[in-house]
Length: 356
Image 1: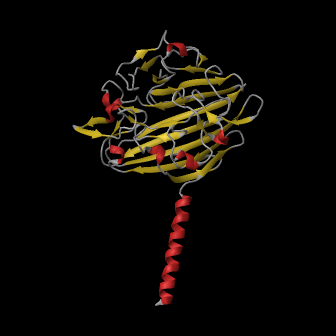
Image 2 (image 1 turned 120 degrees about the vertical axis):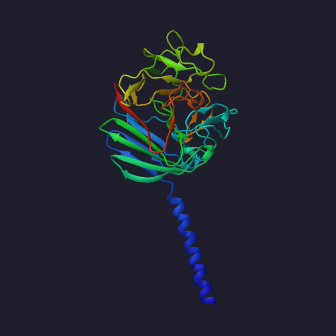
Image 3 (image 1 turned 135 degrees about the horizontal axis):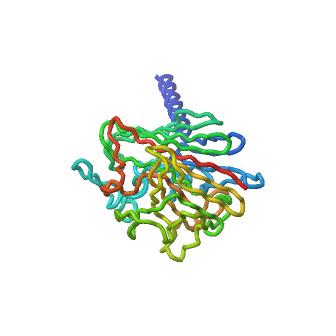
């Protein structure tokens, strides 16, 4: 009996040890590297941890804001680098009606739902489906019916890939299994082309947005339902200018959805933005197949301790989140983000990095 109990105890210890090790192995860091660009991604939140590209003199620097360890992302309220969903951006009143049913969601932002709720896709562990270091990383996540209040089971896939010498692509796909559901995924990476420790981006960065309209918002950043021209306003970046050049005309920086001037038919890629840092010479161009892009100047970022214990301050980075229109579930005049079983949600974005 004693021998049997001893063997049983050893099995229990071994089983516990195996599961602890297995749990530890669930979260990892995966590098994509081709000799010209290096990117680290974790399957926690499908999060972009860093992007290293050269400046005009060939010097490499990390140009995304983030934390020094994966554990720090678990209590992150900034969404540094995360893949956010099931519905990115905001849903007014933390609810929507679909096919006569009212779906109530977590109110995690002034009575509204932000980036999928209190535990969105940026707060879960994704499964590594395929990984080739000099090519791509594919992650998957199965969202259950009722997760964060959203209807139906949803199978989600994201692929991060290197394209040629200097391009970085993100391909997102989602397939509802049994119910119609809203889907609007976004990559929430904070960029600073001078390097993540170079500070304020308002005068150092020049941006051009290929969008002649925006979706105006109320005081809680919920779209009013209007679609307004940017010409002659502080939101006009149809010609390149520094990010902070018209800050005196704004309440507190940029946090707004731009309606892209699509140059192709259907879901072909169109250019969304060009950003350049004058000091380093780095330039980032962005293409997407989505209807909108959220331009955010990290207005709510303040004294956040990041990589290397560097303290990120307000306006220390910018986000360009390609997306469907925010709160589209509550505005019939916005392009629908409802995806039915048998149909697929697809979203592609491509960055190109150069320096001169």
